Structures are given as C-alpha cells and as structure tokens.
Image (cartoon, rainbow, N blue to C red; front, side):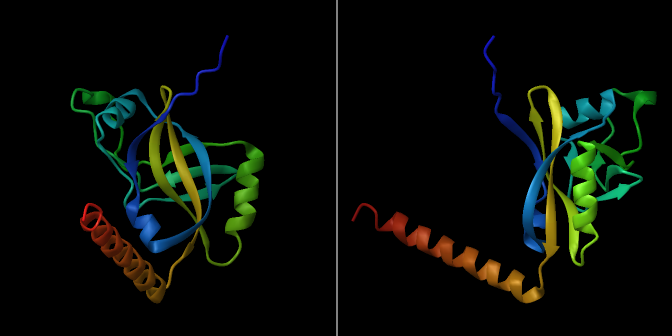
Length: 157
C-alpha cells in the first residue's frame, strides 16, 4: 500500500507573530478539539491573533485561540477561548520546556491547518523583536515590493 502524502490546507495564520517575533524553530502539534469546534474550524471561524502556548505539568496548552461557536451546535458548543491541549511527544515537550526557560524565548502558534482529516498547529519557538528590528523588517519588505513593482513594469519593454 502506497503512502499518501496529503497537502496541508491552511486554515488560519498568525501574521502578527511573524511581525512581533523572530521565529527560531517550528514544531508540528496535534490539537485536542471537540466535534463542534472542528466543524467551526472547517468553516474558517478561528483566530490566532493574540494566542500563546504554555507548558504546565508536562503538557502543552494553547491559550487565546478563539474558535467561534458552531451555529448548529446548540448545547454542545464549548467556550470559544478555552485552553486547547496540544499533542506532542513527551520528549519534544520537555525539550521545549528547557528552551523556553531561557531568557526571551516563548512559544507562539503560527498557523492552524488540516493534515489529512486532522487539525494540526504549527508552533514556533520565538524571540521577541525590538522596535528597531520591526522597522528594519518593514523597510526591507517595502524595498522588496518596490523592486518587484519595477521589475514587473519593465519586464516587457
């Protein structure tokens, strides 16, 4: 039987995280969800904007991940901002716990996506940017846009 590699279907991205942090490394984690939450996520009703991860008691949780209540879910809907347990190997969690203990490191959800039929979260090991770093990255992005615009207009001349 051949292995099927299914493409990742991205549901939501945390663009603010890439603006506010340098991403040192990324990890894939499963996420423990209930049925109505998965249905709501399939509809794209999720927000990662102010979310973060924390390790408590050897388990990793994502806080601030807002999954809007499923409209047909009635009494089965859960609290939209409840902490969601992330599923990773114990060895990986302990490694991340040691790294986050160092000064300036934090765990931030970067994206939420489907891998096959399962919902996965990309978690980044990040270091906060200073204001001048943010300005530098904004200036670099603007310069790249200007270069692309000039290249596009001069392509057929």
